[in-house]
Length: 424
Image (cartoon, rainbow, N blue to C red; front, side, top):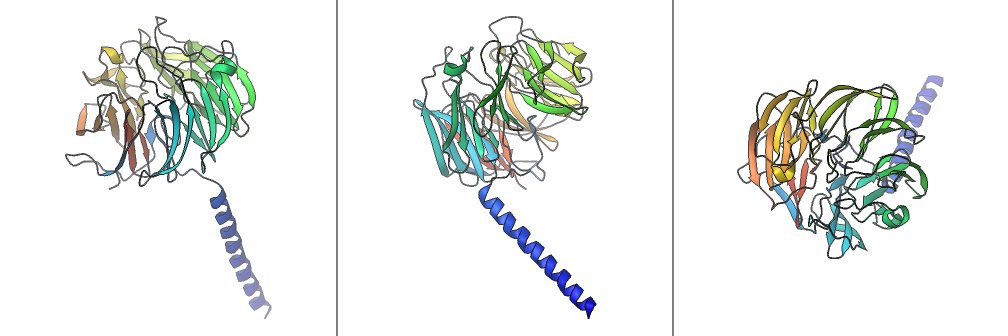
């Protein structure tokens, strides 16, 4: 009898626990946006290195390219789309407004739109739209315009949560092509390398927008920061106009500096630092080249450096199994696609005349959008350049990063956003 009661009581506890968990999950999921493994919530994807975690994608395409899901007319800009769940965030310019638009990932239908006036005019005729890619973290969307307007928006509604005008409040420099670094969320802090001289890295509380600290380091570049834990130590790496800087994200203190800048002032530093285990790879053009560094807690050592191996103008290299794939050379002089050995910098192959391109590594393939508007499927093969498919999809110039989430590939130029289905 006692055993029967015990079993009935145990069964009740199990059923109650399942019911309580289900109620909590329904409440949580209805009030908070969570990021899944299939999301592409920031510049260069989940780990800010251009590598997708997705599997089961198409390994060949029809002559007209992968299946088209939808396309949408948009405004100008080099900001890449980002994806959180069933939402795509697009940052572009329409007329005299910068526009943050939330779209349904499956259909392209507009869910909400937030706009604010902008007067940015590029001094060199390189487009007047935003350059920075948004960051989606929790229930917030963070955007940074070319003129220095930093916004935090509610992901569900698009309503403004907080805002800073970095040009007015912090004397953020326009540099050559406006402000173009993408923000990074680290813990409770939104980090932006766009501050005043002597206080280049600004840290804002993610919910209130209150300035928490500023780090005294070199002037801002077009490179975006990346965070990594190496040998138990947390670093945030910034590739500034003067070189690589590691910050302690908890205190804002500088762990170390590695000078690495262009040989001429009329230059940009744009590629993001690439972290591979305990090593960091950085590269720039304008007679600078690449260097591979081994990171210790408070300093770095050079493994190799070379201007003949890989000089990234604005695209970040992709790492796969000990090899780097990237665009070598200045865009206006005709860049080339190249594969080099990570450990030594030795060039394995070069595809001349390829130009600059944005890439995503998905399993063993490189999804590539050239600056001329060609979408390519390449094999990540260190022995030879191997092109599996190519289709012209957009008018040039195509400089915005790609996004890949839930089997959908997104690409844009100054007037169109396209979404393809890459699921098998």
